Length: 368
Image (cartoon, rainbow, N blue to C red; front, side):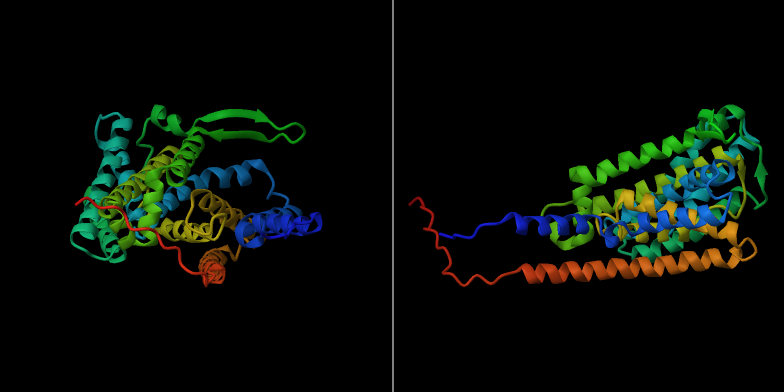
């Protein structure tokens, strides 16, 4: 029988270490960096903390990148890469705007057709990856070029502007609320599509973190063969994750149509890198693996950092933005890799060899 007791003096340091670990820089580095951006640029740049043209612009503009980041995140939970998300976004956008320009179909129906087309692409991605066994990185990269060709067949590459009805645009772009901030004259408002995006955030977070489906997806990504042997339908989950990815990318295109009521050939693929960077940056936050809230935090940390740099160095932003995003991705992956190594070492350190005689159970009775 052990006589060891824990004194209050021992409990206090342990509790303090627990709080420090929970609020440590390795788990919340993006939030600390975001706070630093707000302090530094808020002091040095008068327009950084203005709602109109700064905070509101970032909050609403990055809903699109957030949806694309989720499109990359969902298959990543099963250790599958979807590099066709940017092209899928452009596909849904060109379909809804082209149908709005040349047909009498309601724009809402055109949006549904665009989403359905993206989901068909997701089914094809799943077919190539799951049934034909092609590496997801290669398969979806090739599919992005197939989508680019399809887009050129639908439209010749020129800009389409103003093809969508006010009713359709207002369904996403109309402000949910609007009021003047006392003493500043700033009009505080947020559009409907911001809250549509927030609904997606909550649903995706709940599914991935609090349902058996989410646990099976992470199990598939963690060890595919072990998950298969445990009875998890890994092929079905992989296929489904690619369809969900395409649907989210298509929804990003619909949000773009609400916000800008236009299509240009430069929309979609250029947003792939910021989305991927946000997912990997977010993977180093909170849970130490790809997760929804970490991705959201990463998107807006990068966005406000770029906004501040653009205000402070407007002439250099063309080269400073890609530099900032590229370095962030490298550092984020480095942090995530370091965290993974630390976790493995801790698990090995906590493994204690049991030198006591093994417990021997009596053999089960058998019928003769």
